[in-house]
Image 1 (cartoon, each protein chain N blue to C red):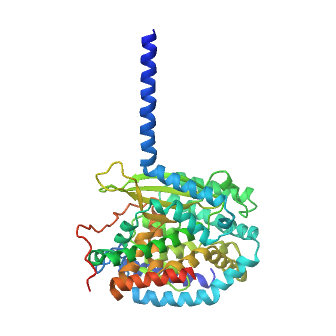
Image 2 (image 1 turned 60 degrees about the horizontal axis):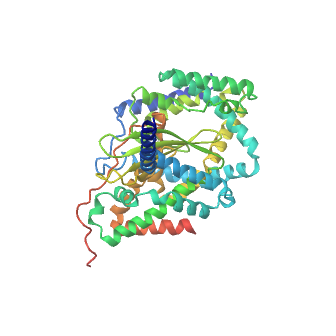
Length: 256
Length: 210
């Protein structure tokens, strides 16, 4: 047991406690404005969001852009495949934990195929064979098991999450690619590569968000929560009714 | 014998013409046929256009404007995103809101399309939304790596079975756009009312062009 393990355990325990104290509440509509997701910790979240933005602008984004510009596409695809392959094994486990046998088996076959015929996961022959990646993480498993999301929370460095998904993240990190390495420095290097690569993949999306958001914080929150629902329900979330304002009165004229 | 031949021929022609007319009407009518048509047109045009392939956003905006936007009901989208304050907006304000929101949505949709290179679109599911006349058509953009989800919510005026289906919301990668803008609109409306919202939208559109 490395000295870091007890700290991880403590974080997990703290998050679980917050979850239980929160009463396992689902993300209920905001009572003041029912059209907006509940965000009881908005004040705190906005501060962390602002902090993350600065860190992103000064450190994460420049490093990711350099990575994108300097490292050849082929190599970056290989890195993505390798990281994704480790993830596929964990996804398989989560599919099974959620009772989805076929998906679990398919992702398991993906992992085995790519590990043996894909040079340890650097190549992705499984996708060519028609087995598409369906990612799952422990937060989604908790959701399927009925655990409520809890309040929306912006984590330092890690970004948008909910109390439930943060707990899931702690579990996910136990099986991250860095655990493959014995030496501490190698683990840090792998985790750094994961972060840089992950950030580089999102460069287009975050650039677009900056252009089209009236308020980045709100848009990020709505978009993240919407996407999370989609992930939990595997692309088929319950269809919400589309609110339309009935308009029987003609528009008042501009007589001012 | 000639009589039966004539009957058969007449019946055959009748069936053929009926089939054609029904087929013709159906092709224009069904939501998933519409989505398939739009998606194919957009991808085909994108494949053959060097400007689009190189990521020229203005070319993509032109493409989206010509192929997709005629099938979108912007009034419903804007109304839904604005909420109850729509009722107290004047005709000029409504028109301004609609026009600015349209520009913004075209920008979002086009921006999402710059990531497309060599893909095919598959319609995965068509679902009616219970308790309404709406339909959600789910599709996936498949290429290398994980497929990208692209869903459309469509509706048509109640009581007109021959009216064209129009898109009233788009889901890109799991994010419903109109829904995502509701909270931002609500914030701007609280801050500066309808005029404040129009101003914020106009500023955003100006910044995105520069």
